[in-house]
Length: 322
Image (cartoon, rainbow, N blue to C red; front, side):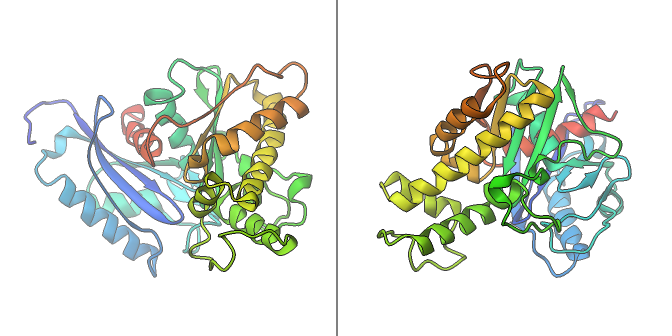
């Protein structure tokens, strides 16, 4: 793979999630050439940085350093200005974390960071479902809930890169749920993997219906388990996604009033439920939205598999910063 080109041909994209960290070597056409991952939950952030840096150096050991534009990282609560993670509620280490400096010092490669949902939005706009769109919202539904918001072709980042924390907008439908951020009622408490688990437990406790989800422990009561059960006709599992989809539709009707989006794109592990979420989301949106937005917003899931949107968006950061 070694090349003598005088221009950067590759970059490294990193998706730092609450559960797993995925990193990849990406070329300028958006092809993921190599990819690897490891569990995020290490005893210290220093150990996490050591594992990531060693993996990146191994992944790029046959490439001339001048042909790598750098490392881009999408991470929760990432401050694009300071290069630090600030008060992330879904990571196992105390904040602030000087993430960019930690990785740059270990690899010798220029490192830039952004909010993980912003990275996903950039990836969708460049390579995925949002190609050709100039106004859209990407909702990342995983360990937490994030959002990347693009208006008139520009990613909204705000003063420190924290614009669009839609997962921490509060709603009445979640008023009795505590969020890790310290508030009650955040969208994240319903539409994240943890939220799916909470909803499922509540529905199991309040219903006498038989369900294959009964008896599963927390580790096994995943969005995928609920999705699989729903696809088999499990009434409780179907109700979980009906409720979650309606909550997302209600939330989207409020978000639309701020940005007038062409589309709202779901991304992440929870979004793999597809139409189980999208159909009730569309119905509730049209029921709740201001007449200006009814039937004018497309709802879709990411066209990029797994964490590719976040990885590709993060990888493109190094080019954008040049």
